Image 1 (spheres, rainbow, N blue to C red):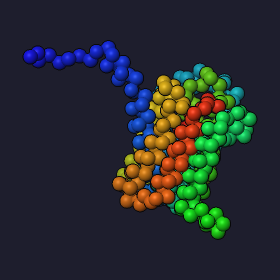
Image 2: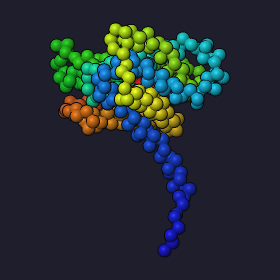
Image 3: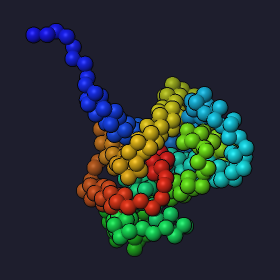
Image 4: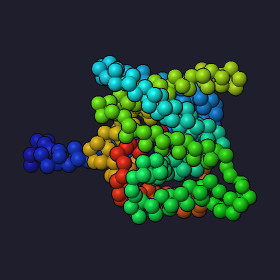
Length: 318
C-alpha cells in the first residue's frame, strides 16, 4: 500500500474551478442574509442613517486600495457622468439600504428578507416600463406570482387587510427600498463599460455617503447619535466590509462566470438563509403564510429568469 498522497487530477481541479462561482454565490447570499438579521437584531439601536453612512464609508475605505488607480484613470469619464453617479448613490445608499434599516425597526427579518428577495422581478418590471423592452409570458407570470407573494407578506397572510388598509409599516418601507434598489439596477446599463464593477461600487459608496451625510447629521442632533461601543463597531465593520465589499464582490464575480440567470439563485438563497437565521438567532416564528409567500416569491423569480431582457447585477441591494 502506498503512503503517498494522491495529487488532484486535471479533471478534478477543473471541477473545483467550475464549482467556485456557485460556492461564492452560497457564501455571498449567507453574508447578505446576515445583514438583514443583524439589522433586525439592532432594531434601531444604531440609528439607520448613521448605520448606512458608516457602512458605506467603511466599505469605501476597504475598497480604496483596489480601485484608486482605476478611478484616477477614469476621472474625466466619471466627471462627465457625475449626475448619473449621484442619482445612483442616492438610490443605493439612503433610499435603498438606508430604508432597509428603517424597515427593520418595525418588521421581522423573515418578512423583510422575503420582500427584498423580489427585487429582480421589480427590476425587470421597471425595465419594461421605462425602456419598453419586451418580456416573455413566463416573465410576466413570474412578476405577478412574486407580487402576490409580497402582498401576502405585507398583509400578514390576510388579503382582506387590503380593504381595511391594515399594513405593517416596516414591510411597506422595505418594499419602497426594493423599488429604489430596482431603479439603481436599471441605471447600471447607463454606466460606461470602462468603469469596472469595483470602481462603480466605490463611486456609488462615495456619492451615496455624501448625499446621506446631511440626514446623518440631522439624525445625530435631533434623534440619536451612533453609539460608541464594541458591538456597534463590530456591526459597522461587518456590514461595511463583509456585506458591502466582500459579498457583493463574490456575487459579481459569479455573475461574470456563470451569467446573471444562474447567479440569480443567490436571491432564493438569501430569502431562505434570512428565514433560517431569523428563526435560529432571533427566535422569530415561521408561519404558514411565510411558507406560501416564499414559494410564490422564489417561484416568480425563477420564471422571471427564464428570459433575459436587461444586463444588470440584480444583487446590488443588500
